[in-house]
Image (cartoon, rainbow, N blue to C red; front, side, top):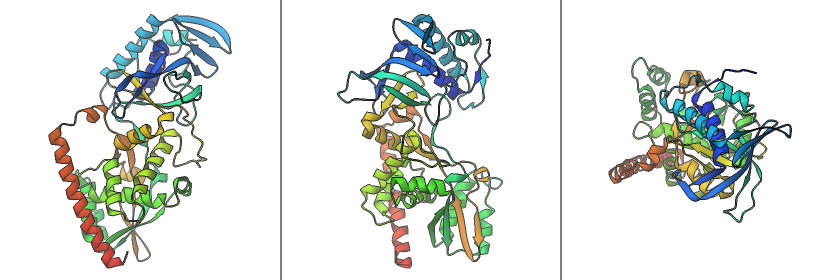
Length: 402
């Protein structure tokens, strides 16, 4: 069979990981800044794609339906993995479209790769039999990993959809306020979202979480904690309240929740539960499907760095993985019209607004290039926001006896 392959950057990156790991025979673990830990790695016995097993070694032995099919040299794998990486790297940074790589189809057909993406379910992108000789902890030999690529657009941890909308009630505004605020759009200001919410929070006396639109997503979040839908609702609300001053990352927003403590909880709960939700989202929980707490991803997270290095977080080191997810993610606002949010509407005599976000990974170079002046500047900006929010919530608590 002769097949021409076309795929986007993320899909080509998955194939690159497959070929590179097959050639290397090992997968290195990473620290929280995604630096390779040179003395900690997983040995790869084989990679499984459907009914085909690819065994590592001095040459790669391919078995189809448990019968020997052929062998391929490491040199050939190395050549084509580099070819894929070069083509991914030279395409435009934010290009999300599909493209072909010349002179690779015959090789992929030869090694029984019928599709760029391996057969998978949920968030599993690559299935491997692994051995960890560097740890005393037993791990599953057959493990599914999710793959994220830092080449091109930043990958997402939680994608926005109509299921991820949260509904909030607005107090202290009129029809005139509603119409004035809704008129602030892209035609009047390219930064209209910041301007719209700055105007909203300056006119409203109080904005309060009301409900979630998706019963399924609500059930999933309740599996994390009975208070978690409210915790996450405040996490989202605080982003929109502060984005016009400074774009706080996910960890900063957790710290702000702890500082304000809007739900009067033990302060550590905010960050602890958000970490749980981030991990659940990374391993298989989605907004549109009921979650049974069984993880589709059993191995961990593989990351393709811009220099072609491939590293991973294994789930036996869960706390390191949790810290990575929280410390290295930011909030991204999806299209308001497509995802139906950010417009004030009325139900009876009450005013409401839907809010929606998605969680995206920071670029890896941002993790390693912060200089001392930038850190000091960010801390000052953060302190300014925290003081503003404290005064704002003290005023609300006094007025509404919270």
